[in-house]
Length: 413
Image 1 (tube, helix red, strand yellow):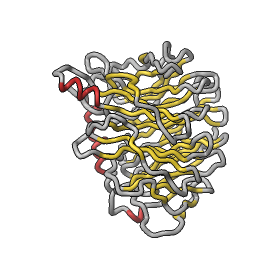
Image 2: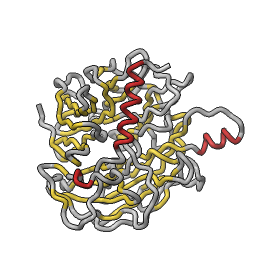
Image 3: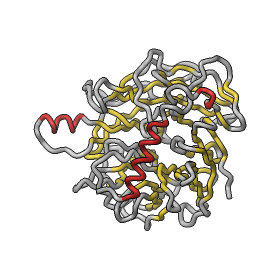
Image 4: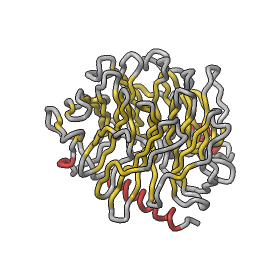
């Protein structure tokens, strides 16, 4: 039985999903896409499928924006932090059926040697199936290698919700939600809850990838995975798990050099739900080794809520979770480290048919926090907000149907 606020959350989710078909469409005409301030404005092209846009800075401050547009993954670059953008470059040389939405979006990260790395999910013929795809550029995004499929089982099943990251030592990590173990269990008439986490790594900047490796059975099958790296360049994953009794709370796991992982539970709201929340968590790791967590829950004990907590022992013990939202419907947190501060953003739905992004920061590694403030708003629906960083500055990267893509520096106050 859903409580009233969970019902409202599900309704808001359906509204957002339907709106993604309407929002932002890539301009078909050549030339630089100009912006007002830090905005890539697509609002005049609102008649077709909506691209989902993800951004990242390189070390020199060049901004990369990758988007799903129809059957193509496109990349644009900006040398002025989003005031203007280059013509789009096709990451996918041939059309592909793309599985692209707020949780399962194309990703872009920058390699240690400046490689532009892009991952996405190619939609399969059957419902909820797909393949994890990858391509890279070694010339600043002007050209891309031929796309490759990273999942190596060759099965027409679910491989989706990929997350991409680069460790300080240059290791490229690609992790995703995989249903090959679910399929085996189903064929053997065995019970299997959720899906599994699989990973592949690259030691040569994305030129080649390792064989796939299973990290954990029984993950949630529809929430994005947060990836960060500790002081030893070890990848750390934070995700929504399917625990006994159908509880979907969050766990964290650190992948060791030996390839082992011992996940520990972080959140304990005991959210019991037999549905897909489409609400992945956020993770950042400070130089001192502190893990910073943020997540959404719709548990009966809390109602729909967004929480923050931290851990100094890799999740074994966790600080008392702090509720972030003000009572409005909220979700989709994002974390980033910049300028000696921890930055945290999340999205709220207002009663006056607005969506807003709330931001707060901590100058003492999460011990105390500034008062949350509204950083940006938009009428109606909008995409998930993301915090990205360059040098000592945090930026909000957010898309909505009126303003297009906004990349806005977050004031340190």
